[in-house]
Length: 314
Length: 43
Image (cartoon, rainbow over the protein chains, first blue to last red):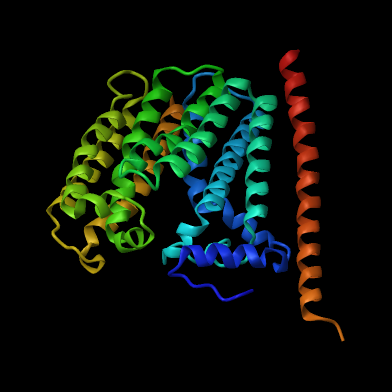
């Protein structure tokens, strides 16, 4: 491998292209890393939540296959995202060690792997569960790749607001796999994740703002500053909390879910207000932002876990 | 004298071949289980 210059995206692309033939065969661990396994765990959990919340039961084998397809589809979308963003990833400390920017994998392998995984996951979902679930899975992959990654991410600070829809599909897919239709509860679960995504990513982007700025990604803190971002986090938390609690008063979930959703949403709001009150501009002083980011992951796990337990108990 | 690069290529190819074989085996079992489940639903 030739030497890579991290500060120069064009130099990186040229270097990798020139040396693609000299790369070793891809290590399976690097192919696995392309699927972002840690992100996949949350996707799988919310997909499982949607499936188990559905009134119609699904055969365990078909249910397992549907969840597997959701995981593979998420992995495919992540691989295609890394394929397209290799130049950006090379410019950010947080992502420079990924297989493509680190030069351990060539882009064509990543592209073939991502497309193959996407097609396989959609076809298997259609054959094992139903074609509605397969269609929504296909839409979510295409949305993530084309709308978020290729179209929005480098163009607008609203990138993760609109692009966040891609990550909100799993509970709808899980529900559709079990029932063959989509009703109000999966739409509310979609809305919950859709409104959760901006506070989650903006909290992160506040303390890695310099990374995004160096790569030229127009995240909200880079474009509008920390103050405006903190206000937006607090503003998005309110409708997110409403969407989280809504299934309970609407009779779509039981008291266990409702109480957990209310308590965890209240804690989310408190953390969002602490972020709003913070004035720090440097990552070292952004403890509230780091806490909110970590808590936001726990929040989704807790709510979907409560929803599943609630359904099992009822 | 074996080129260390050839050794590494063979090691990676072998690891990928083993994983591919395991995945294909798992896929066959999965398709069999799906077929049985679907047939059970038709009864």
